[in-house]
Image (tube, rainbow, N blue to C red; front, top):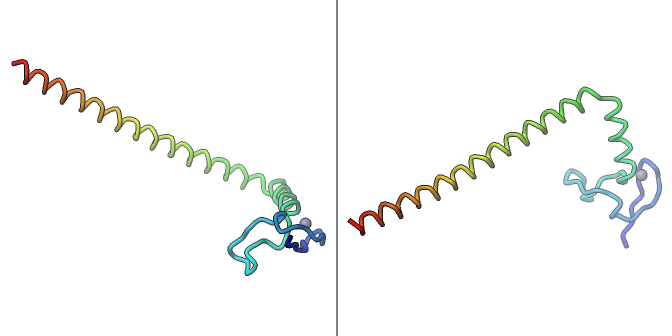
Length: 96
Ligand SMILES: [Zn+2]
């Protein structure tokens, strides 16, 4: 099992305890997940405004996604309706 020493807590841990990062040569971060989550927590405490902003942005993103989803269902419903109309037109055509 591969291990790596965390630069923050200086504990040798399994590489599964480190999150991946494309920026680093090794492909994994220099600090372990535990330390990272602590840093994140501290950052949230230090930057409440940014956290609020981020939350707002995420909410807007979700709303956009939901709207897109709604459009998708509208399209499908319209398609079904068109098919129904086509069938009715066809049936009427046959009967007459
Ligand atoms: Zn650590």
